[in-house]
Amino acid sequence: MLKGSGVLAQPMVTLLLVSEQDIASTIQGDALLSRGGWVQKSNIEGGRVWKHENKDVWLWWFDAGFLMEDGLDERFSSGSGQCVDEVIFLSRHYAASGRPSLTLHVLGVPGEYPHGERAEHGGIKGKVMLPNPRFASWYRLMCDAAHRHQLVPEFELTIETTHHGPCLAVPTMFIEIGSSETHWGRVDAAEAWADVMEIGLGLDGNSGVGEWDSIPYEERHDQKVMIGIGGGHYAPRHTDVLRKTDCWAGHQIANYALEMQKPEDEAWDPDVDALPEGAWNHSIRVCVESTRKAFTGGNVMAHLDRKSFKGWQRRVIKRLLNELEIPVGRTSDFE
Image 1 (cartoon, one colour):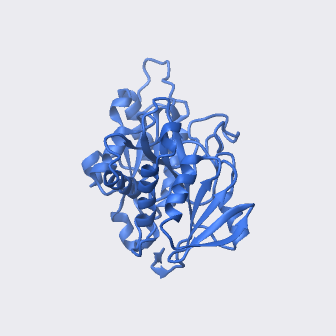
Image 2: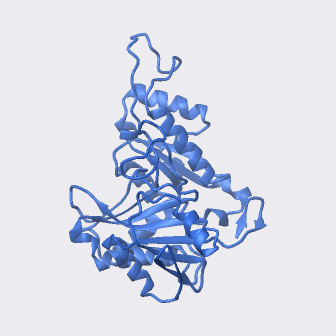
Image 3: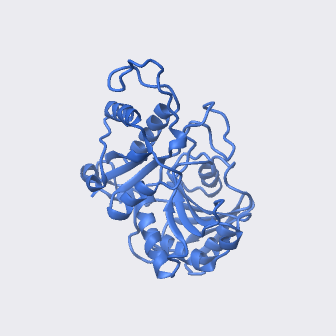
């Protein structure tokens, strides 16, 4: 693996987390373990632990739920002596629609106040975690696996915008089976995710998919990284970019995290006057900063769900992005 200036780095250590309290989590863990190659290690915090014999991939069968359990990367490192580089949570997804789905997302609580307080579903209000660089490529792997296991058209294949906890220090994401108790125990859905993990982490003997540090630093600026801004929770227009291109992806920010208050002064000009108040400014800034940190040296760009904004909102968002030196692109610009 190459890192930074091209110096040979240590292999990446990946931690997969299973929650004993979540059937969609345990069924994914069972599907992956059943494929063989795993060696059981000493328990950590009472939870069973396995390591794959071909890769530095560890699976921790955690006894509790995830969302309120901060620092799981550091806690595992302390118990195992391994320096964890990324965390992937195997989880369920709930939606009021009850529509079966496979979905994935990165973590954080942008747009919520007061900043620094504990959020209802874990994490810290106003804080986002480092996005896992595998996010976009694993979405595409997920789509391929879902078709192989004949889950389509029954299952929706989606990403979600950045939401909930827990807080970690390393890049992370959730991979999920949704969206109700009827679907959480679906073995075919779990096998699809096991395919993604096996291929994506190189457990099948190949090199794996979506490892940013494998790209030489001098080649990274040619790699386009999308931050999605606007739209609903399932980000259909940003998902479309991932489906049609080979770009990478960082944070995706829903409209509910971009609250914006238009000044009452009728003479206010969105192109030159003071930027509006509201959560939107902070949400975009922290998501840009976090994405840049996860994709060091990459060409980070924004994709706007234009139809979800009024004209003046698009103009001030572009002003802020220009200040942050983030270009705005359409789908073709991410190819």
